[in-house]
Image (cartoon, rainbow, N blue to C red; front, top):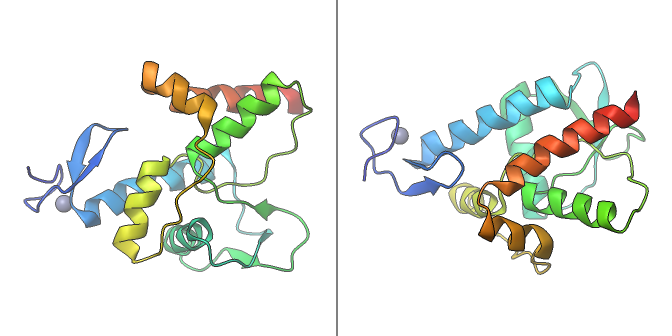
Length: 172
Ligand SMILES: [Zn+2]
């Protein structure tokens, strides 16, 4: 199987686009998806300073990789800033937490910026391999969304869009 974009080997299959990619084009596809979400929906502003917890977990390292690629080092990220918190988590985790809060009728926290919210857990695992980052299996299996998504594939992405709408309404 060939890569969607070049004659290279298409060893990574994306369940989102249902296509195969070589490492380079897989990373490009993810990078574009993150950039679009950060700029259009999450409205990252390079004039602001952002805060990220200083950890070595794979999600933080992957988020930093894409942030520096997308903003070319122009985005100010420190671990001392008080506002504009960045909390990188996969789409699976983000939608699952949202659903749990929604079902338990908890007041939704103001959600931090999440560069990885458009990236599936399985894609995070793939990216970890490509970047040589140790991937720590997520012990919490995101039960609710897994159950729904296995029955209705693509649910996670639709959930993300609904979350966006609900949050926007709350802010008005
Ligand atoms: Zn390719």
